Image: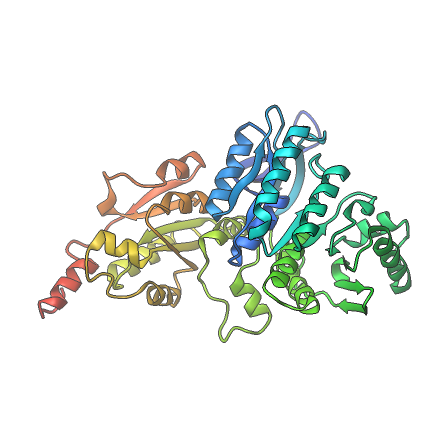
Length: 465
């Protein structure tokens, strides 16, 4: 699915009907549904292959662009002619969710689409450590097709986890574990879950119906409970500090549970990690991802507060989170291979144009390609640390040659900040920024002041100006 966010202000009631008039300020697209599972996994460094269906229109192309920005393998994504890509539009005004608009079709996909996808999944299975099935009941995961996929996974000897949908959980027979929320579990079991006893009865009924060895039921503010035929129930308390938006929490649970198990974690530890991640993501706007730094900080495993560094895969989710909080995003990029006064002035000026400054740093190979042998004089990891120490800088990322346009599209900044020495030159990403309602701003530079000039003076044994 494609999630669209429309932000604006409300200052009047329509004369045509007693409804609010939203004056739109900005829009953004992010991966939703199973795409949000991919977003969570890549944000934590996983290599992901995607299998799914999109339509043949612009929304499908937008989704493929987002997958490309994450570096996901999309060889299993089938474009079905005449089908609409599911798009959910959320209108947000004054940080309040005003309305959601769904554009979708629920009819089953074509038989040839199922055949093509099954063949591709069979090809991918030998490369996989684990298989995650995210079911949103939109016409792809029909019971017959699920049975075929689960049989193929079982024959490959791989584990498979499912985030279920619907009332009939028998279609997940053959899965190692499923992750319904309390409402879904109650409907599937036909039991009104009111207390621990009814929760246990519902779990027993679901595990028997779907022949499951394990079951994880998420329970909102009450946390989650892990069930298994070989263990007593494990109650894991919720860790949410502030609940802002629960959309996407189930995607995060499936992602962290699956990635943890694939990395070798015991089931109980994987469930606790998933619970911690869910507690983080419900404090964000929309279907958001959890970064490694956030997770380590929440687990108390970071020696310092969460780093300002964000990977390229995390930027789209970060951008959505910042906009949901009403913050204007400023993006600037460069080598920063020796910080000087001009850089500091650039970062300070950024605060006049927005609320959150993201600094993108060329990686070492890119600097070497642009500046020549002997550069950079300061490695990318140290440059990230130096930039992170500056109060004016909110986030830092690293990109390689050819990635700048992808980076700009992932962030979708309100302002792309460049030095005045770039005026008259081609600005990579400018078209995408301006098409989304943003602008490019040029900051005056100081004549003769540059990292190149300073380094040349040092090499000649001279005092830099």
